[in-house]
Length: 231
Image (cartoon, rainbow, N blue to C red; front, side):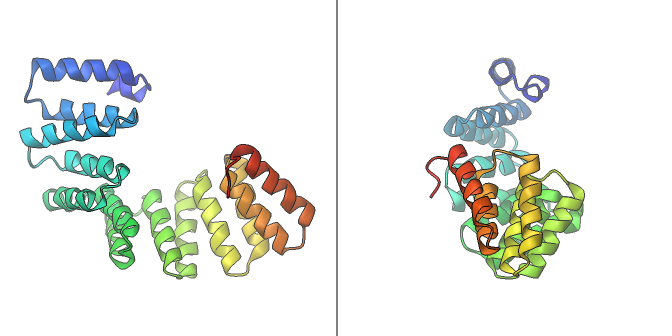
């Protein structure tokens, strides 16, 4: 885990492989191996490692959650949902699994169920910035802009350097007609993350609405310089 934390993923993989070779029923090592392989983008192999961890220790909530994350990345959303649900059957107060289940349900278009899971995550862990942010995304999709704004603001109270939350708060404020406030949000996002193409594009769109065409063009150009295939 120390090597993984330092970003030495290749070395971490070697260590976990040695651990499971020495102790084939070491569920935690299989789980950690899966997590490291997932960080390296080796999702199929990561899935197998999580499955081995679960075969050894069927009530391993964290491995079910991690398997759900890998399956979600592979686009296997229904399977991901089943694993998050399994994790929550084992550990009902698992805030991260509620949040991850909410993400998968949102991607499946089950927005109301998604909201309920974020709310459960936040009831367990009120200072969970990512769950506040995800609740904002889903309520925004549902057209509940005032609720979305409050969720993004809560996320930013907890994590002020959350560039994506500043950007999405800007979108919600723009849709509410609060263009000057939206501009400030995009500018904050870009102060944190200068190569944030979406924020440059959104700032350009809002400046255009405000009649500031030269400034709008500059931001569109910055978005395209960062992301040339920006549609």
